[in-house]
Amino acid sequence: MATHSDLPLLLLMTLAKVVVVLGVLLTAIAYIVWMERKVVAHIQSRWGPYLVGPHGLLQPLADALKFLFKEDIVPDEVDRPIFWLAPLLAFTLAFLSISVIPFGESITIAGHTIPLQITDLNVGLLFVLAVTSLGVYGVALAGWSSNSKFPLFGGLRSSAQLISYELSLGLAVVSVVLIAGSLSLREIVEQQRGLWNICKQPLGFLLYFTAAVAETNRTPFDLPEAEAELVGGYHTEYSSFKFAMFFMAEYANMVTVSCLATSLFFGGWLGPVFGPPLVRSLLPVLWFALKVLAFLFVYIWIRGTLPRFRYDQLMGFGWRVMLPVALLNVLGTSLIVAWRSV
Image 1: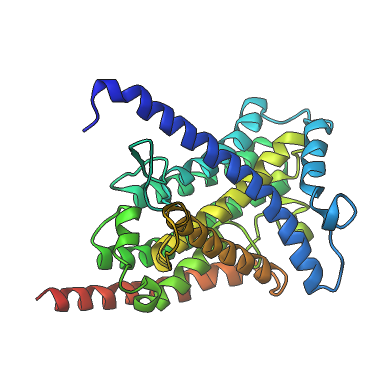
Image 2 (image 1 turned 90 degrees about the vertical axis):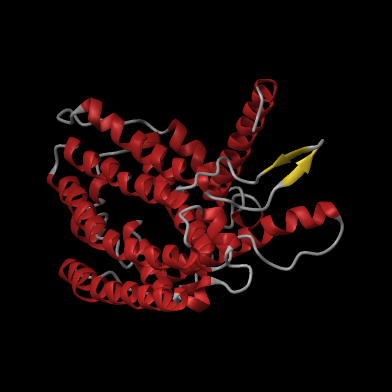
C-alpha cells in the first residue's frame, strides 16, 4: 500500500501516463484518418492523399490546421448551451474510456514498478461499457439542439441503434466474463495466457465486433450520418472545431472498440517475448498495438467493401438475428462453465 510520501510520485506517474496516452491517441487518430483514406483509395483504384508530405503523411496536420482556423458558423435558432455541450460531451467520453485499457505489462524504472495502464479498476470492463453507452448523449443532444429535422433524425437513429446493438454487445461480453470470472481487463488478459478467448468464443467475438461496428456508427451501420438521406445527420449544422470534436470522437471510439476486442478475445498484449530486458518490456506494447491496428484495418476494409443497410434492415438484424443468437451463446457458455465447475 502506498504511503503519504509516495503519493506525489504516484500522482506524477499517473499524470505522465495520461499525457503520454493522450498524445499517442491523438496522433494515432490523425493517422488512422490518413490510413483510411489511403486504404479506401487503393480499394477503389485511387491515389488518396499524396501531395502534402511524402505519401501525404502531413495531410493530417493540414486537416487539423484547417479545422482550427475555419470559420465557426452557428445557426440562429439552435439551443446554444446544448449545441456547444454536445461535441464536448462526445469528445470527452470517447477519450475517457481509454483510461482503463491495459496496453502492456508493468515496467520498472528507478526501482518503481509502473503498470502500463492509466488506472486498473476491478470493474474496468463495466466502466468502459458504461462510458461508451453515455457517448450517445452527445449525438442525441447535437441532433436535438440543432433545431433542424435532419440532425434530429440522425440523433434519434443513433439512440435507437445503440439500444438495439448494446444488448447483443453486452451479452457477447458476458460470455467472456463467465469464462474469466472477473470484470478486470488486466485479469481477463492474464486468463488468456494458455489459450486466447477467440478459440473459446468465436461466436461471441463475431457478435461483439458486429455490434461494436454498429455502435460506433460505421459503415454498413452509419445510418445516423447517412448523407444520401440526412445530409450529414446529427452533425449537419456543425463546423470548424466543433465538427472536428465529433470527428475525433468517432475515431477514438473505433480505437476503444479495437482495444477492447484485443483485450477480450485476442490476448491483449500477450505474444512472443525475447531479447534484453528493455526489449522484453516493450514487446508486449508492440503486440498490443499491432492487434489493434489489425482491427482498425478491418474497420476500414468493411467501409470500402459493404454498402449501407436500410434502416429497417438495421433494426431487424439487431433484434431478430443478433439478440437471439447472443442469448443462445450466453446460455451455452453458462452450461459449459457450470458443467466444468462440478
